[in-house]
Length: 201
Ligand code: TYD
Image (cartoon, rainbow, N blue to C red; front, side):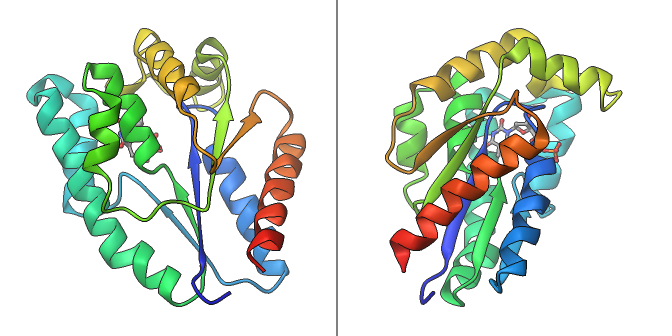
């Protein structure tokens, strides 16, 4: 592949993105592709500020919060995503600008304006949108991970986020039922990615 492929995993918290990404990466590597697994928020300076926000969201305004995610993404694109795509690699990112449109949209910002603020970011070839009821995703976060919800994950908030994700319509989005078993979800993901690869050949 000359220009690589960009595949973004999206969905509310607890839908299993971080389980599914390594499985897809293994599958693609076994087929001989070079794969880069990455995520947002990143571990860079903006990502660290964002993680600090998790525990104390009141410390910044919705606009400042949006700015941080966009700056983090700008750096992520420049330093990780664009170079890997130029080298013909398959990039799997755990969250991308659809998360910003949904999560910061849920804080009252206009999703259209958020998409516009992200127009510097390469359009993904495929968005795997993992879909699940917020009630079920919250149950998984609390029971399986044994975690309390962070400020970005409060149930009411997640319901709004899920509603916004449901409104996005873009040719690159493939919706996957994330409530199915890990194997079933992975099989559906692999089918979608295989179709993409054949289309790009
Ligand atoms: P998450 O994928 O849960 O990261 P980690 O597993 O490393 O904690 O993402 C952290 C939170 O950040 C998640 O609740 C969604 C939120 N988020 C946004 O609000 N906007 C964004 O643009 C992104 C990328 C994430």
